[in-house]
Image 1: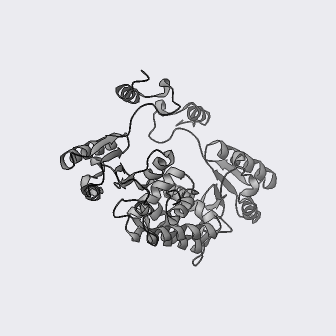
Image 2: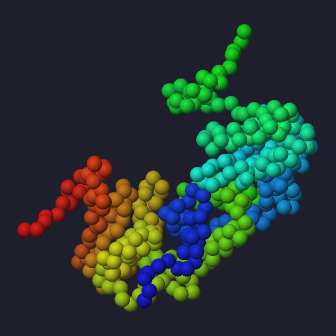
Image 3: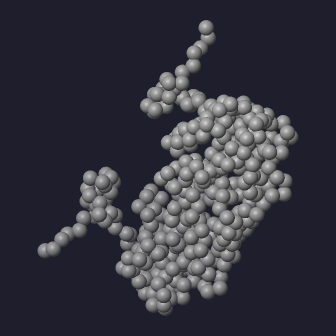
Length: 206
Length: 206
């Protein structure tokens, strides 16, 4: 009798689940147990949704947003978007939060990540060719770097700012403001946030 | 033009992913982005593994361990297991860690959870009927309660100990020891762990 083990199907399922980002070996087992405790309909739906997304959705080669294989990229297809401003974000999932503000009507370009030497992600892994191609079109006069305020976001913003200053000196490059988040008191803000809030202070009235 | 949104396939995928235990809305989006950045082979493999596990694996009605639809329950089929001792655990995933100790040769019964009033899980949601049926067979002389040492594990152990004392007074019921984990200094142990380690101290030598 071999040593007791999970059935092959469970081992294969756990092996797949633990490769997902943020899912470790323990979480993968917990998810597998949970899935097997549901009625089969949920697993079938999950399997179908994974397959349908993989087959029906790709990154838009121009802007990096999700593009439906059948209906194309909703972002690039929208004639109402201002072509003069371009917001550069890390991931396609960063686009909707910015859209919800209603404060930006321009285009987006999703880099597909950020420069992270520790994870072996360099500029060549990002969608920088598409960014250069877009700016080369000559319609964009302002680029907003909508990357995060962590170390990797910082590195990515600095890299892009230098690159754009050399290649497209006529294009204005800005970055999202850093400072106190809405609703936060000073006692909740960390030192770096306060430093940046002070550094970026804006003159009022007068 | 409707408001910008993810393609339908991505929305359906995220909706499924965020129902998984330990996966919130943000993680679901991160996993979806990650999946779409892989080549299609991984998503196909994941989808297949989810479907194969849901279709090919069920909980063994006798012991609650994973049973392959084609090959049955490896645990119940093993003639070498001692029928006199039974270890009651919460989940099928608790079985392999106990097996790896090599210190237990008896049978297992997986409850399928633990009593958790805050999550609306009562004794009637656990595999207690199967436990009673197994003990009713008369072969088991010792039950080890292999449940966790959290509040819900505590409640489950107490509930089962009382139930078994009434229904099967001839069966010895024990619980896994609680105390210092291996390799831990006293300075790393919390108060409750130390209390239980003191309480369960074992006489040496002599």
